Length: 59
Image (tube, rainbow, N blue to C red):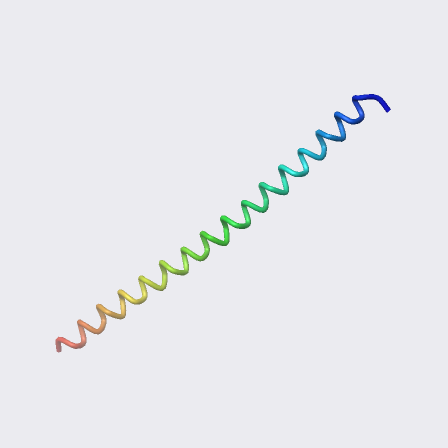
């Protein structure tokens, strides 16, 4: 086996590792975005409840 085999094998390993890292980062960012979306929905619901309480409390 000459050096081209080892260079090709090394390139395949590097590409494989890069795709694994990229998809791991992608999944992590999707989870974080989902969590932030849930927090934002919860905050909006709390604000709506507060406003609803003020409206009905003033009658």
